[in-house]
Length: 534
Image (cartoon, rainbow, N blue to C red; front, top):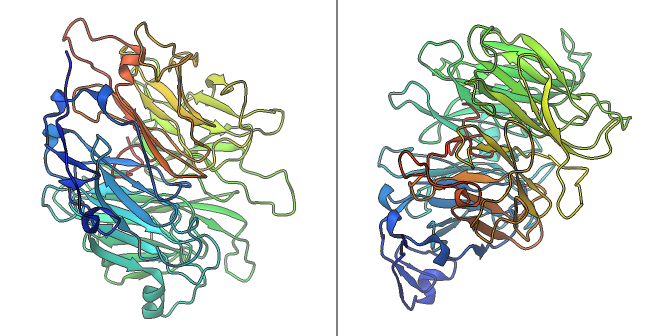
């Protein structure tokens, strides 16, 4: 059955559509009718649109920006120059906004964070929350800004320069590289935003952008945090990772590495929490390498009480050697922070794991990207049993016979049921394609008979550089058909949507006549709120 999108030619005044403001109705020469999602013929829609710049490490997100679920989801994407743009699922522009540093510093070094979406003011519209600022010393500000999902207007801005001056702590680093996580911490409207920053603090903000508390971590944070209820008390805690450098003047001394923390999300009597302050955190776990990777919280080991956390490392220590520590994934008890097991990996990496049921047994596996390393000349994608630590399968991703040896920097796989067999399949962005692997074997997922032209040899060729991008899997139209969305990592900025990817690998369910494809881990941080938990 054909489904149609109703569009009408419309001459947009330059005032409304040349970068100042685009309403949801008057954009790019079209009037968007708000047609029902089921009336849309996806094959007739544009598959790509140019952005103002590449996305660097930033990843797109899907959202409900108009309060209407009948027309499907909208897409938000950020560019490294500080532009944040929203599009309909037909790639018609809705609005174009920018981060507060968009006119300061290098155009390719203003935003590396990914947008999170959450309804901050209970108006039925997802708002956009994103970090900004450059790595290293920079004269420009950094922080987190919230944008109104309906029109892109700034709801609030939390700038680190002004906050540091107010609180009287010095810093020459202001950027927020990681992605803020957002959660309703008590399921009754107590919304909080968590993130780490280069100014050596971990922050928890209220929904209006005011500070609930901040923790002095004594070193930078590149990682993205997670929210999860780790003690079954009905309230979500914040899991955050930071770096730490050795300092013999502190008592007790600190050693080179990273620290994983669990924090209470309740309001505190004092906003500032000192480094290692008693009662400042629920627990901490010190590890021997920086933690650029982001923590993922899920049920990974039924023999351990409560949830578990999986986190990889980064590649920094020792500084005077090319053989870096951190060739591992740690499985940590979310309840008390103890390390349950260490899974060996070929190399240290800033990539983060994805979680999902790959074998249909009701048990989660973790999937990890590793660059080339000791005894391994090529990068790999590996599925692990988080209980035993054994690899369940390992593949060498290639595109046209090429393998990116440095694959995995701040990337994550996606896990979704593409072929309708009830178990998760694994997707990764690699060089210039999205690769799909069978979850239960790691074999390449073959294109089905009658697959769309976007499927070739089991791959989705994108013709853009995806070296720092994670594929986003989404049901854009609410009909069970999965789409894949990617944004260009370097060079010219492009957003691409590959619609109805489900049709590439499967057929309609014989029982219901509808697609039943589940998403476990939709891409960077697992969901649109970037909660980092399953």
